[in-house]
Length: 212
Image (cartoon, rainbow, N blue to C red; front, top):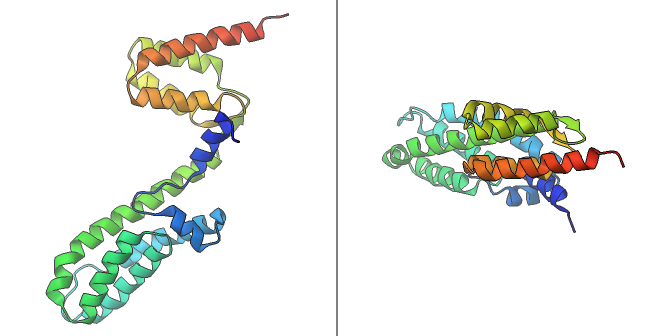
């Protein structure tokens, strides 16, 4: 059974992308997260490329459109983006049937949603890569936590954000759950709870560091 810190680390490693059923995607690759992430990396440039090819469809380009939208369908299926896959399939069938009006009626929505999907995958990958480059520390810096508390007491949002950015730029062997808890409370503007918790934490650190 995982302890709280292990649960936080597990949650931070979970792939969570709007519009993507990542559990289904992982199953496609035998639950191998490294392979799946490699597929996600390939998806981004391929999606942006095919989106551009699907713009400005006309009667003369309907055959090319059906080929390109088929490609979009395939790469969406490959990551578990079922809603986008189905939308691409529907327009592929319309294009193959020569239904230009049907394609034109749905194409802008498809392109908009596909663009949102591609940017969502790109954003998750950037966050994943940045997290893996984070410095590893024994515990959150005490002076930084004091700075955060004082910023909360002063309701200085810029200083709060700066302190949290510094705290979240590292990984911690001890008290990693504290940083996750602080983020949750600050996002909810629950500064009084943050102040009380940090005062308690500071007192605990002082007692722990006192000579015996």
